[in-house]
Amino acid sequence: MITLGTPHLGSPWGGPDVAPLYEKALTLLGKEEPPDASGGFCLPWHEKGAPLLGDCGPLPPYLPAGVTVTQLAGGITVDRSLFGFTMYSLPLSTDGIVPVTSAHGYATSGEGGASPPGRAMVRSRTQPCRADFAKLHETAALATFAPTVAFDFLTMQDLQRGSQTPTVMGLAFAAMFIASCGHKKQPADPKTTDQIVEVIKAMPPPFVDTSEVRFDGIGEFTLALTATDLRARGYVNKGNQYAGPNAVCVRYAREGQPLGFSVESSTGRVLAINNSAGVKALHTKVGNIRVNSTLGELRTAFASHQIEELLDHDFGQGSNGVIVNGPDGSIAFSLDDAPNADYASGRARITYLNGVGLRGHAPTSAEDGC
Image (cartoon, rainbow, N blue to C red; front, side):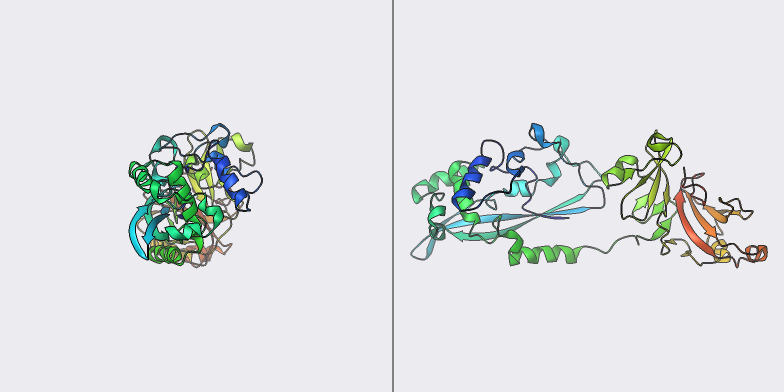
């Protein structure tokens, strides 16, 4: 995930006291916020785990492990020039709306103010840009917000203290409209785009093939997950077809995702990961066993593991199949309906890789691991 000027810790322009001023400023510029916009009201500055305002909901949960968050901030510097020479500069450390500290504040934006261990990895970048003070006066409406030289010394003191005073906010707001890394211009800024491309190109390829099946999981999903982890990833409790959503064991699924999860309700632990959509590309880490592999190839690949061959139509629904038990769990395979001689010789083929489960919970043709 890449964020651009996201107010993880809010903005000086947010909250019930300041947000109306921003709305009035937009009105002066002939613009207005969308109806029912609540960002201004709900995003005042909130330090490290402080709750949002009453009706704005809870702080959002942190992203799960495996996600890398690159937070990109805009940092405007205003140059005061005279006769073409820069006399001094005012580093605003903001994009005009969101301070750099807020745009870089994801790790302390959640409940308690500290990112829990094992969660998303966070990286921070800043795209600097400069604005000529003289250009702030080219638009009469913006001149209202730009302090004069007489206030520059006070403004610099405010900046050194990190205080968001009216002079600082006015200067930052005016600079936002002309600076390339300003809050309004940042998404279209070529240098910002270059940073985004650089981040994407530097991303490593997936460590695990997402279609690879191991004894402890499938791709990025492992049997060590819990119901809480699944909900954080957008999976919901689909209940149990026999006993409803409050059954001893329930199914978790997510729209558009091929895998389903059997979860023990009392503990929240994942008992099995099921190939709910019947993805034929699933293959095992050991021996690359997949759909159309033969029973003989499976026996060879997993020779060092315990293999349960259920060949008397007892794999479920009158079918035959194989369960391979490993150190961390079990993998289940359905076999085609073949003559006994083909089972004996190993010529029978795998028709379906059912999924993985804890010992005793491998998904078969009859059960999903519950």
